[in-house]
Length: 330
Image (cartoon, rainbow, N blue to C red; front, side, top):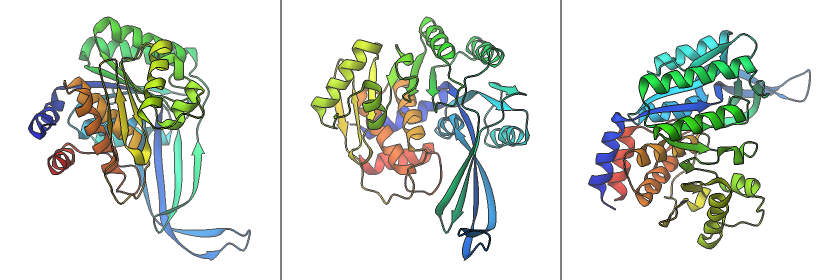
């Protein structure tokens, strides 16, 4: 692989416009210390020193894309509530447009709150509704997506599915249909519930757990023979163009009709794997949309996903960091 070619492609990410469609989450971190046990119950008391709020879920994919230089437009649903207002403020602060956000009076903003002591997570609390969007919310979201496709001419669409109800079957199928008609690349980080609904996408990026569950192949392992077998099943059942399998400590495996490539993980000091999948799908989409080949795409996605694991919490990759890492490795 040629580092100059890859770094040149990274510089060209700035020309990409990418819609991110999926479940929005506001990530809350309450950080402090524990030095006593509650007299009310045998549980530790967290003395909170600071609070931090970050963009999570599909918004983290959008932020990764933005930090890579692409124009990212998040299409999702938030509540007309305080967490929703804070979420929109955070998006604005991070340079993300709110044009694709639908506000709902009946669906609260999803919030995941983590209680942290000395960088160790003690407890997580989830406040969310996971049922499908109402017909009214679904229609509003689709209308917003169609409008953005017409006015912004996106290069690619990324589906980010957390099984929280935003990506309904109707939304998924309609957006894939619209994208195909417009020649727009589609990519998905799937979950089991909608696994086969994403038939026809350009890039399908499951991890091993999702792949085993989705294809009902519990004995699947990370060998090339087995992974090629899984791709054949995806191709036959879903007409997927390219599959990118994330293999945790074993790196990534990318495959299509033309070729397959395994890229091993780079040894790093791992602090937190949260959000690494978001970084991988964002980077891989940018790489493919910029004309990089399969091996180069897998290399960059693997590099970016490993880099963010060095830091606690959910953090995005940046364009400069990716260029430095590329130059260092190649």
